[in-house]
Length: 273
Image (cartoon, rainbow, N blue to C red; front, top):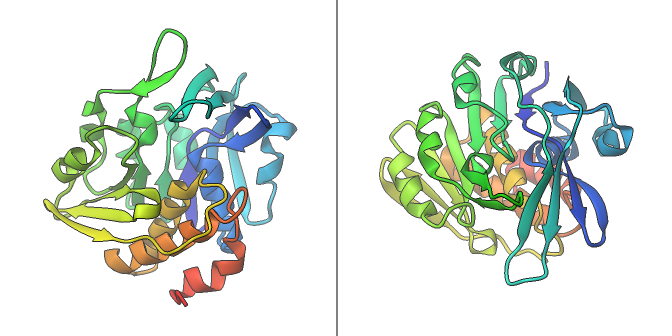
């Protein structure tokens, strides 16, 4: 059995510079593998070697639900902010696909709402951390990603901690404060400005470690996966957040998951020197 499961659509990302793999689940699996952790990745995608080749790794077990199409994003960085369009969508993940992960801890990160909140309640006694970005997205008539009404977040399991970027919703802090409880932490990531942990209505901010940022893509998912792993291994929230921040800082220092593999001993032992 893998120590960690990740679930969500593996995506084909189209940029001006070319095509690359994307999606929270892909970055999460690659991060776990870089940290020498066995991980099961549950996704919905076609049997396309060109898409899935980056996930061929001895530490990654792929559970692929067949789909005629791969979720495909077109990205533009031409303006003051990144813009996204969904050009194709894979099938939603079934409950059977999620159950096939069979890991003691799971990081679930949908990109376009492909995981039903009700299914998460059927996963049993797993440690569950949810990257909520994909539940906060809606598409306009041209397929461009816009901010969605957030009521779906109240259907997520109360026992699950939540991770969202301050860019995922204009009222991210207010949502986090309202959704947090004594049982649930809601972590708002702020890139180079750190992470704020909301729990039972209180907020504790953790500044980010220094990093030479070359490619921030996927850093939030690296944070979420490492937080999940460290909580599963017994860290308290503050310690898990610190280790996850260190991992995310190393991941932005190159393409993909950056220099994360070089920092594996520090991240998984807790040394941050």
